[in-house]
Image (cartoon, rainbow, N blue to C red):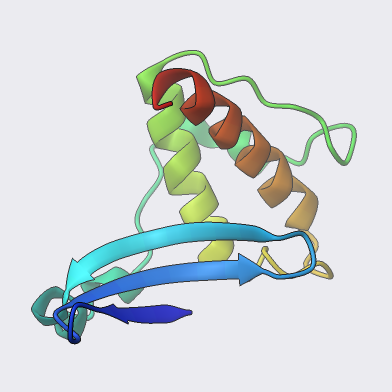
Length: 113
């Protein structure tokens, strides 16, 4: 979903899972930045963050984010998963998406209250 804010000067880009009542904020841009379309291109995840791309042993195995670097890699990883459609309940990586979402949420509650 894209929200036009303040007379269409800003755009808030989100992905929503209405069943689980989850909203993932992808970007907040000026209208000009939105028009350039860079927000549509997938961001890259560092290769050393590859553990995020393996499916957990248990469908809802918890990831623990301990450092700002862990958090940054998780945010990039979840952005890629959203772009790939993993927010959809039937997507094969939906469990991975939800596990990362839970880890990011837990980190933000502590570090960005």
